[in-house]
Length: 239
Ligand SMILES: [Zn+2]
Image (cartoon, rainbow, N blue to C red; front, side, top):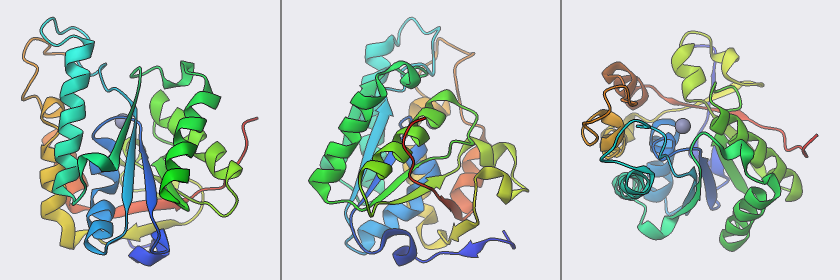
């Protein structure tokens, strides 16, 4: 953490409403939970967009088919955001297929995100990092870049999740530009409750797919206690 530049809440948000793009329900809590809690405590509006339905975490479960698991994950995300000071009105579920966001018409997805930004008057957009080695995270980052390019004056920030976990010692590897570090110690308890609300991703809900996804306890601990990292993005139109 020593070679990163600290960021205050105002540096990241400008004090105006923000929109956060989460590829899956849980990315918002892991990558931005402290920022969300800090915003709400300061009266800054936050709206989170869940890009996919998250239904691919337990593909072999018979008891938890896609529809049931997607509903569970929506409920978990609402609970998680409540821990951070948001209400159910502060989240939009686009419901695109998990692990297949890149197969959805990008113009449709960009229009959906832009509509939320318009409604909120948001000038700052946060998205999962394109450096995260997951196709939905990469697709989400591309959508954010396109939406920001279409809205002059939009500030774009990327938050790393998987790239940070896989490469904890090298901040510069998580994204272009200088990493900005946001101190989340005041929000660690709220952030822990938010991550914990994603019970299906912690091995507590789906019992008939042992090969399904479950967060490692060390992963939970890391994202609970470490400060958050944001990289300034550059708005750009699709190639
Ligand atoms: Zn994700």
